[in-house]
Length: 148
Image 1 (cartoon, helix red, strand yellow):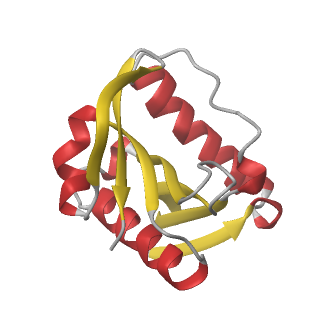
Image 2 (image 1 turned 90 degrees about the vertical axis):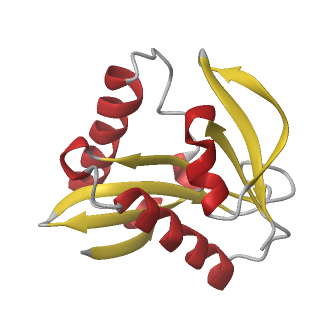
Image 3 (image 1 turned 90 degrees about the horizontal axis):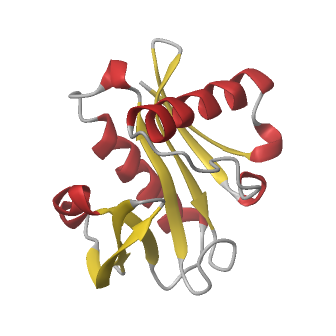
């Protein structure tokens, strides 16, 4: 397993294509959600890629405070390839994302917009719910914050 963190302009064309294909496969096709994944925020993000056997097994994008949420750093587009599910790659990619933020990004906290069905998963990583659930692209989400 190999973990890489790259800024947008450091991604190869092949890596960017694989990231966008994975996000589309899971967030658009698998979750049956027509939404605009390419939101022109990737250019500001750090891209954390977990590779296994040369393939992207899991991925997140990470933002400094002010680049996505005003006061906090953020982790988003958390995705695990269907081929690599059940191997704890979701937990690993989140732990690596948290570690990167704590080492490299100055922030008060880490904020996410989590799909509600993953509440327990994020609680186990130190995130706490803030406010009430809401719909984002017709999928129930909840704001969560980690200040550890």
